Length: 492
Figure 1 (tube, rainbow, N blue to C red):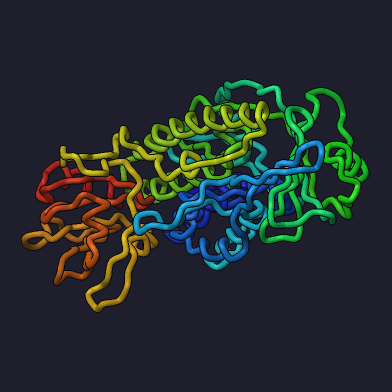
Figure 2 (cartoon, rainbow, N blue to C red; figure 1 turned 135 degrees about the vertical axis):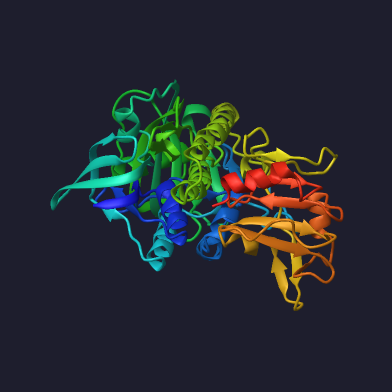
């Protein structure tokens, strides 16, 4: 079997990458060693930046309709009294940030929606297909894949290891995975129960005796979370979980009717030394593992795939292979910050039972200003710099119809915004590049000055947006030879 990209792992990272490649008409094969899709709630939080990515992939509205927003936390005292507090910083949507708060959607529903979108694009994961090994040359990767039907040899131009924290791809490459154990072990489970309302996230105890039962939006279930001893077996049977719930809550009226999924796990924080060796790259948990606090894991994995997809497509269309080196340069630094933040949040949760989350966890302020792909020629005090996330902005088209800037990003192209220019474009039509003129009589009208405000535009300024919605270049002179060279090298 021959293909351009072999993706190992059909979790959130693998599915996001597959959808992005599918909409770009890049041949790929997506495999997963599991016989069936993941069925639990583990990664239940989708941050605002991930929602923007999912909007570009045409699934954000489906996810919002299927899930819901985080309820307040209710902390119970030993005497049964309680206090409520907000668990998530909820902000109103703004013209620049259309999603003001995280969405709660159990992981199996998120991945189910991604699989449905992938099916609409004519593809599906191959479950029960395990990577057995691979070798690479200067021009291809040759992988051995086993299934119930026997062994398949897949020859691909690139191999992506999105195969989780125990990644065979990473181990085969002998990439170090340094980090530390966090001396924490926990249980997470999805339960049918009675005795609790679904309007709040219920929490009891502190330290090693904490327990929480969170209503899972989009389902009739509750998610159980609690720390357990580091060593020894723990009873994960239905009866065992029911007993520990009764013990830690002191509530005999809470009745467990069924346990639909359960898992116990030891927490650690680890970061791969490298994300790329030749034609093989790592994404998601294969590249970074961390405690679940802060709801960063699934979201960071999705952003890995979002960063990688357009770069793979560009290289396959003729861009310099060195473009793929920017994937590690940009994403590894982000993962390192995320690991530190998640570990700090774990300490706060263990010591104070504090699960409150704010803007820092929403990932809207992450960017790549130090990347070699960031070209900034303005040298002014604009609110944005090259490498930052490109803000949204409501505009109108020449026919008077409403049009959001983000709707243009669904094309997967580079976007050149020419703000009230004096004359025709200095750029010639180019594959993968959309040149959009903004002005009173142009194709796009900034009728309420949202673009001017968000981007610090003045007449004659231009901004080049990357396919993943980050600012590639800012300039006040679109005739800049540096800008022309940038586009000639990278836009494919």
